[in-house]
Length: 161
Image 1 (cartoon, helix red, strand yellow):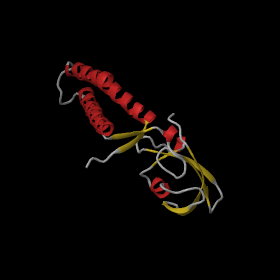
Image 2 (image 1 turned 60 degrees about the vertical axis):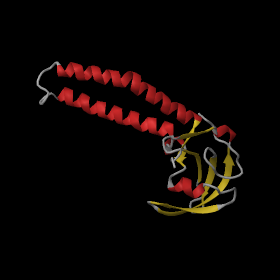
Image 3 (image 1 turned 90 degrees about the vertical axis):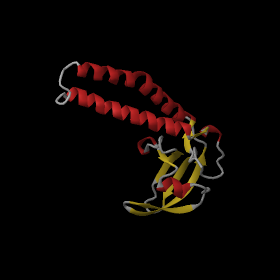
Image 4 (image 1 turned 60 degrees about the horizontal axis):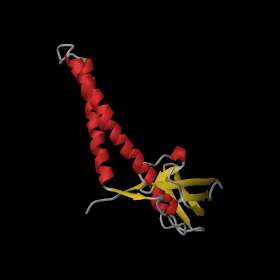
């Protein structure tokens, strides 16, 4: 069975746009760079050629990765998810019961997770611990700094920004 990759509509669009850029622009540019570098002579000691070939490998690898993820994508409209429990796309307000600190995260797919922007992966330890919780539920998350006790204060619909 194919493992689905959860993505918001905006995350899906970002990955699709990256794939288009890689295939239509970056791939062509690196091929031209390889041709120019070949014209400089001996390929064994041609650093420009080796750098271009390495870049080509990275581009082709990312293209394959994006095609795989987009092919397995389960696109979810975060603005229409129900807010009765924590699920993909919801924005969750938590309280750290030890420090009293309030934390807000939107649960998104692994490709979209960015803690600095307030989103975490549903597949991360935090995401897995939160899934299915309702307002008032308490739960624990194991972190590098130790075990943290958290409580769900609020659950709201996310946006597809």
